[in-house]
Length: 495
Image 1 (cartoon, rainbow, N blue to C red):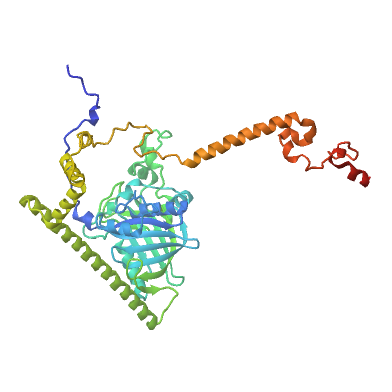
Image 2 (cartoon, rainbow, N blue to C red):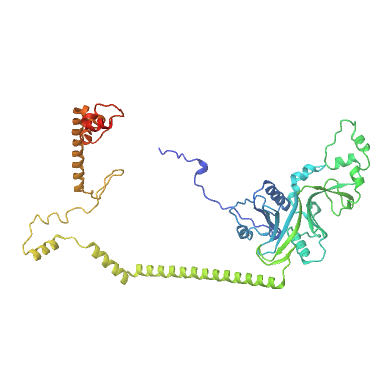
């Protein structure tokens, strides 16, 4: 009986089914998409600010974009065409300043802003009196409102067009008021040249209704425990709420029906809830290309026409060198491909026809000369010619019969095919000298034991014979009788 396979069912080979690729509608493809990344030094608040900026740019932005230190701006530029990305916002933090760069993909221009102040979204919401965050409002693009961007100067027009093109346009004839749930306000101060960015969520509330009816209309469940009938709850409510009475300028007449009791041709109140982030920034410069082009506008640096012309020439020269290198690279690649094709054609033709080229003939000839033919007859013939006599049968009996294969060496053994080094003759001489030295040392030691009293201190080391009569050491004593043996007369004279 065949055994069952132990392979789990989910790991067994199953036929692969290709998922159907659904084409996105033209409205989504043509909408401006964006990347929001950060560069420079790492900071937790800057990373949080970039995430809040992504949330503001939703839904046409990469909310879960993962960036690493090894990633460069060029990597995101290469991906921009595949994901229909039209703008890239880069938060760059240095040791001195925080800057925001807004780049029009893929070839500029690049607007660089210096960030003076910023507030995170969580801080804005926590400090508001009435906190309101609707997650459904981030499913649609916000409405862009520009204030005081109509002054003189081309840089103001370029800023205004850049901010407008970052978000999808609005068609007033086909727009639905229910999709406008957020707004982004950009206000320019011509005196300080600062731009204030604010982000709000928009809610619409009907007016001219008392509180009881408004609670029922807005789907808030009221507390009816103190009332016997719902009519008491409706009649005892005030005519207007405090917020509506104070803010009469926010009353508008709707053109379409909305939810929560907001009907067309009736008055409703617009309320804004700030959800952050807040950014206060200033335009520093505008570059023509992708972060490295000609400077079209600078806030505090002005250059003469001569300097501008020199910079243009320098950039043109760099561009020409880049094009030359690129052209040379393409030529080298084409040359390599042609060489490969020629080599393949030669090898395929040779294999089909079976012809051998001159180079192959030379290689075969060298191989034959190197290997040679092993035969006993050639060796016997050579012996006859040189000596003039037939060789013995035992002389060439083993020639050619030996196995030319290398012997089998088991793994892990210390056996080597290399011949061992022969011992030198000097080694025997060194061994003989050592043996004689040991014998001489033993003999001296025995003699030192016999003459212990005569040798003095050096008898312990077996060196009494060498130092006898040569040392006058008396052990440090002034009156020593041993001094008479080595020269008593001189010692007496000294005394």
